Length: 209
Ligand code: 5GP
Image (cartoon, rainbow, N blue to C red; front, side, top):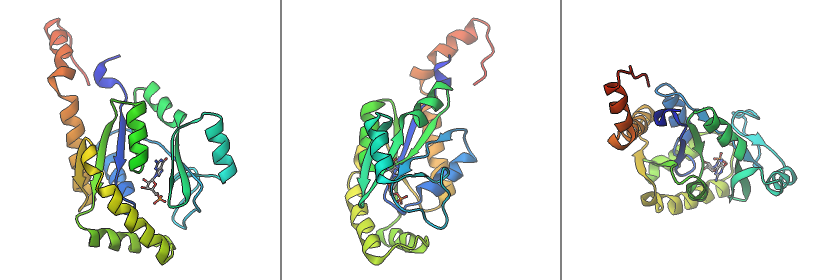
């Protein structure tokens, strides 16, 4: 298979409320990829659907998935468990598709260990005020204590931004998605990646990417 056609693991991390889901939605208009649907033990929000936003499971079900070795990475965030299943990622890669993971910082670290070639983005809010507005505005039904917990966790996560490959500011989601797409394109066009194509063109082939 062409190196250019190998699937890549793409991590989109960033504090809760920064708009990862919206940016991933906007990225869909620009590129073809799969989104890994995580498992979580947190309660379902009115705007969410089981199997689409997350696979919503009980703590016992989550524990069983971990014990069976089916999870690639897991984390406990604000008292709830979240995790990426191995098959969600490996099935996409086996088909040569890119797979996008919407996860928090600890998960991003664990994915980096499992997939050193993963490309990791950190989404930064334009300001702490904007992040708080977004957290409060998303109608999650969460109480004040939960929102304060998410804001405190956001400060910890934002301090970790420099360990990522790229930092993208999410002011307008379409622009953030365009920035991510541009970074991915630049990576794929590196001479190191594309050098074999030069040989193939010289050998008379027509290249389709
Ligand atoms: P939320 O409750 O707002 O949907 O998610 C809380 C945080 O957990 C977000 O930062 C989200 O990106 C992260 N998250 C969602 N799924 C996973 C996962 O499978 N693994 C990890 N490590 N974090 C996740």
